[in-house]
Length: 146
Image (tube, rainbow, N blue to C red; front, side, top):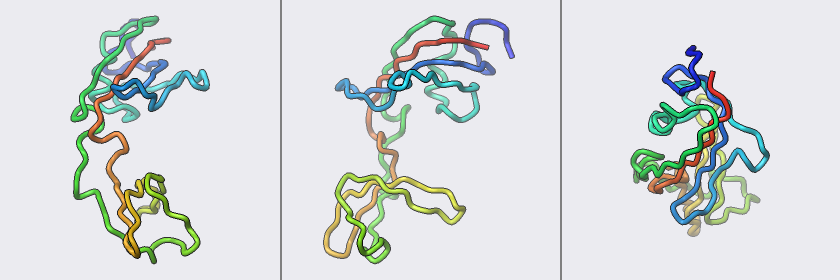
Protein backbone atom coordinates (compact mmCIF):
# COMPACT_ATOMS: atom_id res chain seq x y z
CA UNK A 1 0.00 0.00 0.00
CA UNK A 2 1.14 3.48 -0.83
CA UNK A 3 1.76 5.89 2.03
CA UNK A 4 0.81 8.79 -0.22
CA UNK A 5 -2.40 10.67 0.50
CA UNK A 6 -3.28 10.36 -3.18
CA UNK A 7 -5.67 7.63 -4.32
CA UNK A 8 -4.02 5.05 -6.57
CA UNK A 9 -4.93 1.57 -7.86
CA UNK A 10 -3.99 -0.12 -4.54
CA UNK A 11 -5.33 2.46 -2.08
CA UNK A 12 -7.68 1.83 0.77
CA UNK A 13 -10.09 4.76 0.66
CA UNK A 14 -12.54 6.06 3.23
CA UNK A 15 -15.02 8.38 1.59
CA UNK A 16 -18.44 9.91 1.72
CA UNK A 17 -20.39 9.75 -1.50
CA UNK A 18 -23.70 10.91 -2.86
CA UNK A 19 -25.12 9.29 -5.96
CA UNK A 20 -27.79 11.34 -7.71
CA UNK A 21 -29.69 11.34 -10.96
CA UNK A 22 -29.23 14.30 -13.29
CA UNK A 23 -32.52 15.78 -12.05
CA UNK A 24 -30.93 15.97 -8.58
CA UNK A 25 -32.94 13.17 -6.98
CA UNK A 26 -30.91 11.18 -4.48
CA UNK A 27 -30.16 7.52 -5.18
CA UNK A 28 -27.71 6.63 -2.42
CA UNK A 29 -25.65 8.49 0.13
CA UNK A 30 -23.29 7.59 2.94
CA UNK A 31 -24.21 10.89 4.61
CA UNK A 32 -27.75 9.75 5.50
CA UNK A 33 -26.42 7.76 8.47
CA UNK A 34 -23.09 9.63 8.56
CA UNK A 35 -21.24 6.37 7.90
CA UNK A 36 -18.43 6.85 5.36
CA UNK A 37 -17.72 3.96 3.01
CA UNK A 38 -14.45 2.07 3.29
CA UNK A 39 -13.18 0.35 0.16
CA UNK A 40 -10.02 -1.02 -1.33
CA UNK A 41 -9.45 -0.02 -4.92
CA UNK A 42 -10.06 -3.02 -7.17
CA UNK A 43 -12.11 -4.97 -4.59
CA UNK A 44 -15.24 -4.83 -6.75
CA UNK A 45 -17.26 -2.60 -4.43
CA UNK A 46 -17.19 0.08 -7.13
CA UNK A 47 -17.12 -0.46 -10.88
CA UNK A 48 -13.86 0.39 -12.66
CA UNK A 49 -15.48 3.53 -14.10
CA UNK A 50 -16.42 4.80 -10.63
CA UNK A 51 -12.96 3.88 -9.29
CA UNK A 52 -11.31 5.80 -12.14
CA UNK A 53 -12.98 8.96 -10.80
CA UNK A 54 -11.12 8.55 -7.50
CA UNK A 55 -7.59 8.13 -8.91
CA UNK A 56 -5.43 11.11 -8.02
CA UNK A 57 -7.81 12.56 -5.44
CA UNK A 58 -6.32 13.41 -2.04
CA UNK A 59 -7.48 13.36 1.56
CA UNK A 60 -9.95 16.17 2.21
CA UNK A 61 -10.78 16.68 -1.47
CA UNK A 62 -14.37 16.91 -2.70
CA UNK A 63 -15.27 16.40 -6.33
CA UNK A 64 -18.34 15.83 -8.45
CA UNK A 65 -18.38 13.60 -11.53
CA UNK A 66 -21.09 13.17 -14.12
CA UNK A 67 -21.04 9.59 -15.40
CA UNK A 68 -23.03 8.64 -18.45
CA UNK A 69 -25.30 5.61 -18.37
CA UNK A 70 -22.94 3.39 -20.40
CA UNK A 71 -20.11 3.98 -17.92
CA UNK A 72 -22.29 3.90 -14.79
CA UNK A 73 -24.71 0.95 -14.72
CA UNK A 74 -24.95 0.26 -18.44
CA UNK A 75 -27.97 0.32 -20.69
CA UNK A 76 -31.02 -1.86 -20.10
CA UNK A 77 -30.75 -5.24 -21.80
CA UNK A 78 -34.04 -6.61 -23.17
CA UNK A 79 -32.73 -10.14 -22.46
CA UNK A 80 -32.92 -9.31 -18.74
CA UNK A 81 -36.71 -8.86 -18.85
CA UNK A 82 -38.69 -12.00 -18.14
CA UNK A 83 -42.38 -12.88 -18.34
CA UNK A 84 -43.15 -15.24 -15.48
CA UNK A 85 -46.32 -17.12 -14.74
CA UNK A 86 -48.22 -15.83 -11.71
CA UNK A 87 -48.05 -19.36 -10.24
CA UNK A 88 -44.29 -18.81 -9.68
CA UNK A 89 -45.22 -16.39 -6.86
CA UNK A 90 -46.96 -17.06 -3.56
CA UNK A 91 -50.71 -16.95 -4.11
CA UNK A 92 -51.23 -14.36 -1.37
CA UNK A 93 -48.30 -12.17 -2.47
CA UNK A 94 -49.49 -8.75 -3.58
CA UNK A 95 -47.55 -7.86 -6.72
CA UNK A 96 -47.42 -4.19 -7.63
CA UNK A 97 -45.79 -2.41 -10.54
CA UNK A 98 -42.47 -0.89 -9.45
CA UNK A 99 -41.87 -3.12 -6.44
CA UNK A 100 -38.47 -4.77 -6.12
CA UNK A 101 -38.30 -8.41 -5.09
CA UNK A 102 -35.45 -10.83 -4.48
CA UNK A 103 -35.36 -13.94 -6.67
CA UNK A 104 -33.38 -16.97 -5.52
CA UNK A 105 -30.72 -18.10 -7.97
CA UNK A 106 -29.54 -21.71 -8.45
CA UNK A 107 -26.27 -20.89 -6.64
CA UNK A 108 -28.19 -19.69 -3.56
CA UNK A 109 -27.64 -15.99 -4.17
CA UNK A 110 -30.49 -13.55 -4.60
CA UNK A 111 -31.03 -11.32 -7.62
CA UNK A 112 -33.25 -8.25 -7.33
CA UNK A 113 -35.96 -7.85 -9.95
CA UNK A 114 -38.40 -5.00 -10.55
CA UNK A 115 -42.03 -5.88 -11.22
CA UNK A 116 -42.82 -3.95 -14.41
CA UNK A 117 -46.37 -5.21 -14.98
CA UNK A 118 -48.94 -7.73 -13.84
CA UNK A 119 -51.49 -8.75 -16.48
CA UNK A 120 -53.69 -11.70 -15.66
CA UNK A 121 -51.39 -14.69 -15.11
CA UNK A 122 -48.32 -12.94 -16.62
CA UNK A 123 -45.84 -11.03 -14.45
CA UNK A 124 -43.13 -9.01 -16.21
CA UNK A 125 -39.92 -8.84 -14.16
CA UNK A 126 -36.96 -6.64 -15.08
CA UNK A 127 -33.58 -7.91 -13.84
CA UNK A 128 -31.64 -4.95 -15.23
CA UNK A 129 -29.92 -2.77 -12.62
CA UNK A 130 -32.50 -0.21 -11.42
CA UNK A 131 -30.16 2.56 -12.62
CA UNK A 132 -29.48 1.03 -16.05
CA UNK A 133 -29.92 3.69 -18.71
CA UNK A 134 -29.50 6.55 -16.21
CA UNK A 135 -26.77 9.17 -16.27
CA UNK A 136 -25.64 9.75 -12.67
CA UNK A 137 -23.78 12.34 -10.65
CA UNK A 138 -21.18 10.90 -8.26
CA UNK A 139 -20.18 13.39 -5.53
CA UNK A 140 -17.28 12.26 -3.38
CA UNK A 141 -15.41 13.53 -0.35
CA UNK A 142 -12.17 11.73 0.44
CA UNK A 143 -11.92 11.27 4.23
CA UNK A 144 -8.71 9.24 4.26
CA UNK A 145 -6.34 7.42 1.92
CA UNK A 146 -4.11 4.57 3.12
